[in-house]
Length: 615
Image (tube, rainbow, N blue to C red; front, side):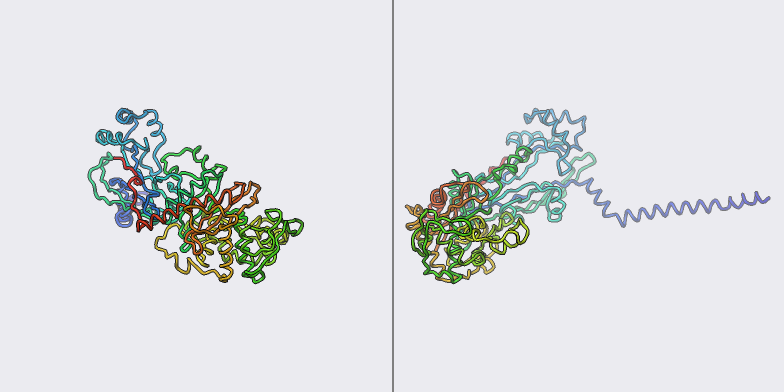
């Protein structure tokens, strides 16, 4: 009886249980719908649109780099490539498409198979089959495009440098962004197929040059076929950038380096710091980085080259030799210990510590003052001045002239600060030893006085320092483009605390060098009155001697400063470096006279400098 009653009670509860189950399922379904429609609706709509809408990006044309007269130094070149969209072409359909492409465009079918097998490119939706199509191939494809479903010819915009390696270290180059860079740059509008300025002006002015991406929004069906165009946003070209570089002077500088194993030439406007030429050897062709496909072997040949062609010698430090002597002269006069009227007895050699430091002629030059000491480049005169004032006074003068600090040029990440050693630096361990274990010794001070061993500077730093003597006492900031910066503003151009008597004495000495001293070879037809200093420096790394020459013209108030450096080229600054600077000065003077006769130095971009665009 009890069992029957329990069964009856269970039967009465079954509808309630079923109702509860139904309610739970309904609640779950309603909750799911609410979550999908209200909370996640926008996201699912976006996913649906992505399946229905295809975005075809349109890359911007990068702004051109122009020289100071409007001539093209870097532009963009259009090249056409053949792509495959794998999702539109099955394994069954591929042989027929491949054969049609092979016949139509005269391509290698095995090569097409190999490239298809590699899978999609970094953008994830297409595969590169062939690069740099010829104009006739592009036209043939377009005529048959409707019958070549899944294949596509698209344009790539590549950086092009019409003058090859000319000014490569100043201009720099562009490269595709890496995947890690893309993660950081995607919020700034970069695409996975983007290229970015990697070095030089290309990197320094990236935001000015790059432009903005555009593209088409296409609606496609389930088969991937385009149904209609939903919108088109044109890309925005980057802005052109006019540099301070003068193409004629740059050519002259690089021609001057042609027969040297290595070196650099720097030319500056003395008043403003504008870089007129920045040449370095060995160099490289930045068009190498615009190639769509580059092998590892080619990369290794460039990046692992023992000659280091990517290193800018203009911004790398070396022993300056006698071109450093004006700095020692400044330290002597500014300290008050060796005023401008000082005369010292020079001799065959002077002993400091355990070494007798010689004069370069083996005899000395008698009883002379600053002007003749610079004129003859007397070592023993400057030993006495340098040792007499000490390392801290020499370092102070060097700092005032901009040494052991970056110059402020826009590409300063490629620039070394160099070295001006002193007793404090030695006490701290010279950068490689324990503090207190490498004291400053008399031999160090003698070497520092003539720019050897414990002094290393860059050609760009030396040009900046000589600009102080040329412009009457202003330390300028070298720069490659004016842009929106006022380079004459106080933060970029400051007065050097130097006595007028010190400045005038150094200027007169530098003039004597060219007038009838070691720099006499600079004189000649087409060369303005100039002042300068030769230098021959032992390579502290153990290589052959370096040759230097720094000068400015016209004298006394110089408008241009030129520094020539021949790396590991023994024979002397007057033999090797001076003729290099002379070529640049001759080109500058010729350009100046031409500008004066025409009334204007501005030219329009030359037609042959504009990249040829394929149809």
